[in-house]
Image (cartoon, rainbow, N blue to C red; front, side, top):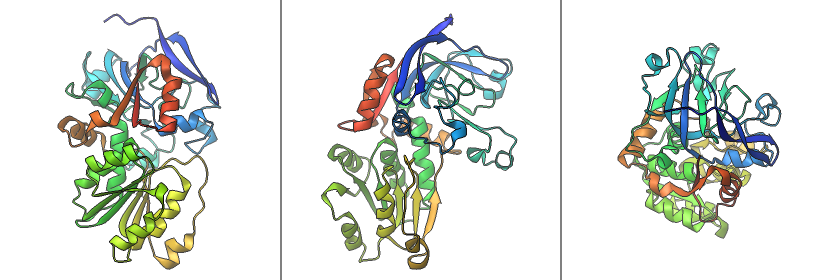
Length: 359
């Protein structure tokens, strides 16, 4: 196909200052890949960034310092150009559908050399750093030479393939929970990733799988995705319900995926002694908790969950074979020019799950 000289792209200039502009289409160098973006999701972190939060926790990669930049890190694209050596390194051909992991590691720091690339000390993240890893809210985007790229089967519709990144994150968070057969597992926050966590946690054969949220339509989806019980925390008494169901001990595993500070304290109270908590969410600011619960009172295992190392192949497989119901997760599909509307829909969460932009 003929690649145009110019394209439309959303550009970040500051807090709530996002503009749809015409910019040059990226050109590929050695090892790089150019894709025509087929679909791009709006993540909760995109919404928080729009409002001014430093979601990656560092001024070094604050998008309001390295601007303008094109946002977007949930995407799938069609390969339209391959730089020298890229085809051999990645195993792609022109016309293939592909996704790149959201982190572009340096490959040289102590973490990369140990295979812990998702904690790379000098990484890039798509959509947050001008010129280095421009994001997917555009008609075309470039995968840098160090990108971790995966081929996407065509049987996954493009709108659902944009879910691969968040579903890979869901898989990693569930893995960090170290769920044992028969465990009582509570997952808080039934956004797209939380719902993906429910699907994946179900595969671990927990004894009781409980979903928490404040929106009835998301709780209903949680039941469809495999939750045994869905509790509306806005009605109160969620902690008491979990304690009653567990003879006063508490749940074995609690995964926090709400992004709301109170859900952290809620989890500490719901967990049994020696239980495991997984903190996945990107919070807009610091969250204070009673650390004596973690140490002196319960001796809890607190696990963080960052990104989705080695989980993309599983996410692709689960979306392809239906173990994760991608069609039910995509609630809104909008053209790129309606990106502000998409941000608002994702922000309110009213009758929405995942909002996808189509360039």
